[in-house]
Length: 183
Image (cartoon, rainbow, N blue to C red; front, side, top):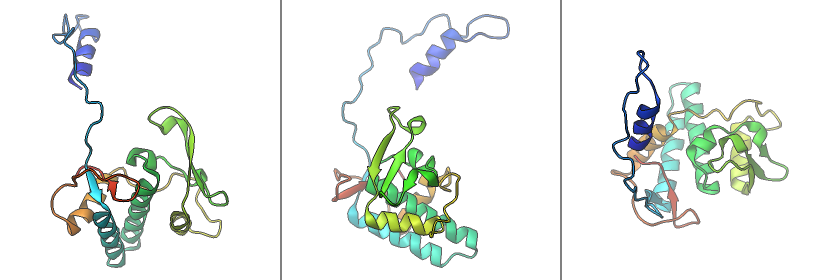
């Protein structure tokens, strides 16, 4: 991020037409990038407990809006675990991206980190959960999957109600753990 800011400062001009910086002070310094960065990972037990906490919060909700918010966030967490996709990509899904007959999700190119469109299988339980959240019986809305931009915050709130401290470990998305956003 610092490198990006310094590069900008050497190309952008002030109101008087001068550059903010004459030269990038870090030019020529080799940046070391981690090949396989360690990311926070939660155990399967933590994932299940977080989903349970989300369901409980939905049941105890004071309003229909609050109840639906917790159900949508649970759906997003379920999608993250089952597909391995980033929360930012899940937020950009539209109901039209779900094909319940073929049981698959289409990930559009404009929201893919690598700039590729792809299709992932939609497991049975996830297909049922997705149908229920959209209204079911063909009443899916045409707009975005209604998930808040503060999705990580809400998952953190539900997860914090179950466990104290951040997720750690070397679990993976195939069963013994699930990647969660940093808390």
